[in-house]
Length: 116
Figure 1 (cartoon, one colour):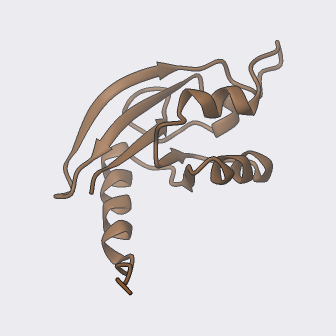
Figure 2 (cartoon, rainbow, N blue to C red; figure 1 turned 120 degrees about the horizontal axis):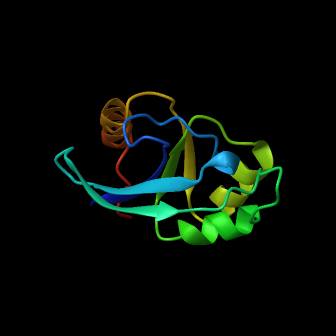
């Protein structure tokens, strides 16, 4: 089963944006074999913006179709709202390629649900 991820990145190379300060999210599909495909880049008006911005809820709507969001940092309140909306926040500040590899490894380690 593939997973769709949003990545908070300013340069397309590193997971280097705080969730509340991210002005864009790279959307990727992580495939069953560990490979991934870049689907699109979604612009965002950060909620933590001194000149005013969107709300956390507005940002969540932009990425509402993903399973997880990779960030350099996320506040507790935003993290709780993401989880409540079915999006798993992952604090993983590193090269995007390495972060995706790590996420794939973590998914592979999850115990399979038993059929009862």
